[in-house]
Structures are given as C-alpha cells and as structure tokens.
Length: 424
Image (cartoon, rainbow, N blue to C red; front, side, top):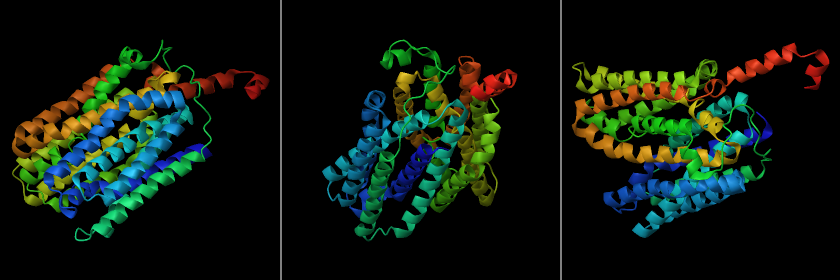
C-alpha cells in the first residue's frame, strides 16, 4: 500500500477501535447506569439508527462535489461531539441528541472512507484494500470491546464517561490522520465503468446492475448482520437454551474466523468471479442456519447445542470474510467516476435499512416462532445465491473478475516490442 492508503487504513481501524469501546454497552449505559429506563434506551438506539438513514441520502452528493476528505472531517467532529455528549448525558433529551450526532457522524464516515480507498486504488488493488479495511475494522472492534469490558463498571458512571471520551478522541485522531493524507484525486479506471449519462438518483436507479446489487445487499445484511444481536440471539437463548455468556463466545468465534481466515480467503476470492463468490456465501449461510436449527430444534445434548450455535456464528464469519473483498469493490467498479460517493452512500443506506428491519422482523420470530424462523432464513440465504448468479449476468467480465484485466495487461505487455514496453 502507498502512504495515503496506509494512513486511511490506520484511521479506519482506530475509529473502529473507539466504537468497540461503547457499542456493546450503550443499552446498559442508558437504561441502567443513567437510570433512564429500558424504553429510553430503545429510543436512543432507534435514533442512532434513524440518524444514519436521514443523512446518508445527502452525504453521497456532498462527497462527489466536495471530495471525501472535507465530508469525513465534518463527520468525525460530529461523531466526537456525540460520543462525548453521550458520556455526559444525564437526561433523555441529552442522550437522544447525542445519539443523533453519533449515529449521523459514524454513518457518513463509511462512504467517505470507501471513496478515499477507491481514489487511492485501482481495480487490481481494490480487492485487497477493502479486505484490509474489513480485517482492521473487525480487529479494532474486537480489541476495543475487550478493553472496554475491562474498564467498564455499571456502578460507576465515570467509567462509562472514560469509554465515551476514548471514543471521542479516536474520532478526532481519525480526523487528524485524514488531514495528513494527500489524495491523488479520482482516478480514471479504464474499462470498468459504464459511460453514465448525467448523475443523481435517477442515473443510479437506471443502472440495472447497481439496483440488483442493492437488492442483493439488503438481503445479505438482513439475513446476517440484522440477526446477530436480535433474532439469532433470541432464538439461541429461547430455543437452544444458550446462556447469555455463550453469546459473547459466539461473537468472539465470529470475529476470530474473520481475523484468521481473511487473507487465506482473499487468495481464493481474487481468482474467482465475484458473483460466484457471493453465491457461495449464500450456500454457506444456508448451512449455518441449518446448524442453528439443529441447536434449537434437535434433540442432542446441551453441549452439542452450544457447539452448534457457536459454529453458526463461525460460518457467518467465513461468509463475511468472503464478502469483504467482493461487494464493496464491486460497488466502486460499477460507479461512474463522478458518482463514486453517491454509489457508496446508496449502498450504505441499503445496509442501514436492512439493519433496521432485520431486528424488527427477526427478534419476535427468533423468540417465539422457532421453526418458521429457521426456515425463513434458510430460504433468504438460498435467495442470496439466486440473486448473486442473476447479478453476474449484468456484469462485464472485468467487473465480475478484475483479475482478468491484470492478465490482459500482462499479455499485451509481453507482446509489445521491447522499447515500446519499456516506455509504457
């Protein structure tokens, strides 16, 4: 990686490290530590999610017009103020307002960072760049959550103020690092982008491949991330008899698989068609849901049920490791050069919608409708496979498999006369 990319990745990892300090404890902090009640905690979490839905439709155009750096700086400052405000909140209005700032700031960071990665990469290096970002963000979240768990004390509000202060500082560190990055500007990527006429939402909605990718993305996030801490957790405790502490072990297994497998999986993914890789993820997740069904509906021992439940989270992690170098680079390669920010923001908006709808649907089903819950998400996983294969028919060969462009350029270089090859 070049110097600019290294700094972008470092800033992204540190901001994830800061989020890891507070995200697992936000509900407990509002409901119990500040004694504002469970309903207020629910409202705070809802505002945190809704703020992202409000700002993302506007952030993409700002990124494309102003560049990702100014937008990221504003987002980092807003998120820092929100984190510090949350640590000082003693009333409902203060907590809700801080959640809105924190949610809006962190939501805008993602498409801005993604656009910076696009500007500092090309189709040949983009896959590894996004894989590295996903790896470092998960590592940062995991380490932050681990350290935060050692510092937090529900009987001492000051310990939570320390966590939120660390988070606020990490966002400011991200802003400081971004200020030192020399962006090369939006590169022209030959042969990977549609010509594109005009811009804005109408152009995006008229791009059939991008629309199909957004539909696929919604199903991906709805069937996986939208269930982690809601439906699947409720199903595990109610149907499989999983202890709450085991949920933490399952999430740790998920993160461990991502960290260990990411770069092994990357070598496999780089040589395959993206649509086929996403289709394979659907099959892997279908198997994961079947194993979850055995954990809650089978007649094995409690130890077997626990092992099966943890395996479900581990298989989800394997699928995530396959998706990280596949989906985000594909969004970038589909986007016209002048609309990279809008495409990234649109896909981030789809993700937020899935994360909002997923718990609302999966939570009640996982808690009470155990059999239908498993069947529903096995079918959703198989739907991922179908949608991915269908998307593949809308992609150019290079969009579906960027390694073809590298092979072609090497062949051309080998057949050029020596002087011409050197000058190229």
